[in-house]
Length: 272
Ligand code: ATR
Image 1 (tube, rainbow, N blue to C red):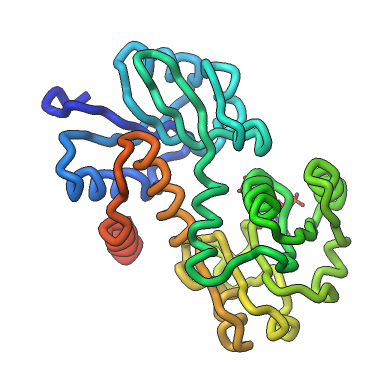
Image 2 (spheres, rainbow, N blue to C red):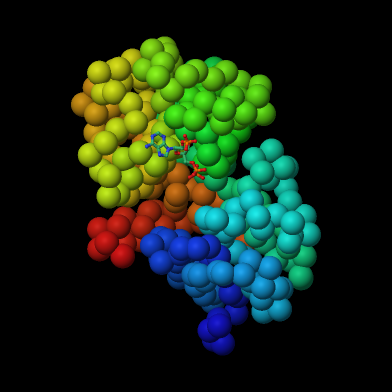
């Protein structure tokens, strides 16, 4: 711990070395003139890590893979979004009471709303993992009509049944008429930058194509979508907005969005 800092924040996950959260949050705290520090902790023992959070009075925590679900039993309370999504990405420590939140859903919608209002729009979601759960929940809350498709169909069916929405077989994904396409799969993520989870020939029908991958900044899918004339939204924006929601929860203050965006973009450019 940095003894000079008034408030201490951290990331727990495994792995954490490539996370951009430390760079983003340190930049935010500095711009907010807060005497706070943020460190990434590689965690092998989750129970022990939560005990440390309590013992050291760490004020706020970001939670990443693989602990977003398994951390829930160690917390004192969770908010409504967490109960629906089944995953925590943020912890707030209020005098020893640990509450779990999920800012991925709100972060996704805030980023999306910079471009379009999803209310009444038909949205195809590629994938049925943890990220898809947060995205589907957020879209349904915002009044969109959601259709799930996933390589492993049972998982698409399960997610669709949880949120009472539709699913289509993975092999039929390009045949669906819709307004927005969201990729939550890892297809196209570094180092597999040359592949796309959706055939470029069927992208021109979409008003907007979203990819939650942020490395590379423009995935193959987004490049094809741009070439097809659709608007595009990359994962950096969702990442920044979910981080901004964390700052709001931890400090009760307005986050310096542009500072956070520049810090993340610079770190991606530097390859750190
Ligand atoms: P996350 O929490 O980031 O969503 P996850 O739960 O591991 O991660 O989910 C990864 C998603 O990417 C899943 O929907 C997965 O499909 P399966 O359920 O069939 O595994 C999808 N995915 C990963 N590699 C894929 C590939 N090569 N083709 C299609 N989908 C893929």
